[in-house]
Image 1: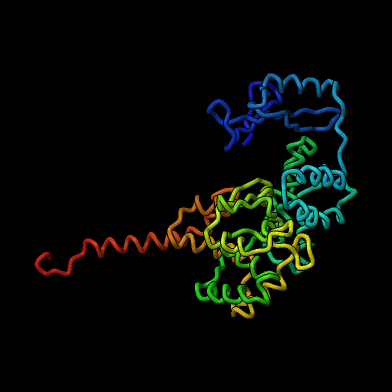
Image 2 (image 1 turned 180 degrees about the vertical axis):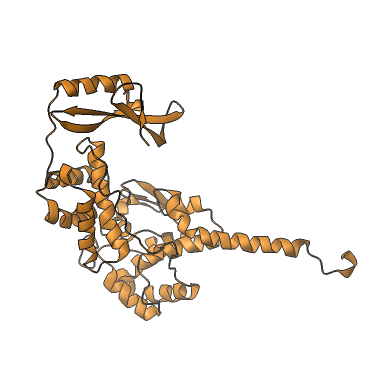
Length: 359
């Protein structure tokens, strides 16, 4: 909620997250009218050196006309700026580019300042008509939100995010799919088959032993592997961060059995970086009698689930999976809670006695 200051047309928003000198950080805004047009403008955060007095001075300059009128961007120009910015910080920037394409098709030549919540609603309704799943529709909405958040941060858009008011309900996805112990055993047997192991079988096993994403497996090079220290270095995770992963003996043994002549640890059968695993995964699932709906990514869930069942703390699992936050790892909390419930049941066994003399 915005709060007034004792200076005309100057108000601020106290952050719920950011802190400045132990108190909530303040973001200052100004309101003014010029040539009959009302304007609200973000000035900046207290932690960045802005104050109510400075905001008031800027407001006076705006009213007097001693400033250059901001030129509104087209949606096409705004999207281009956003994509160029996220390229440096987001490994999945191409996904954002792909999901923004229909938005460009609809509004590319429109002025970004003219986009309204109704426009976003219409755009999302168009996406829904493509028979996409609710979770996919939500991803299209989220990237538009990120676009306007970026523009706000860069002071290229000075209104409330029009995508913030649009909602997409999705089913609860906190329940994760994981292979059963029997499926894991059959999977290992099939992947070690001489026909399959060199054409994707080892990739599948290493995913099971490490919980790595397919993209990390495909990018992994021998220069990033340290067999002596039993570790690998991920130069680029999903969050564009570097990470060092410690390996189990099983994973190390698998790496030692591979041919080290290629640049990539798990190269394509045709040489160079592997791009896909779906065809091999489908064949392995069939031969290992794994449930048809299980995805390759569920090997990652299986890895995390097995660790949680063994009592490994969620913060440790989070680091092993290179999650950006432990909040992402909370989907495995129900497994830990099961163990806790079982442990509390053991208390009864410890203190309850069937000896009639003690009753």
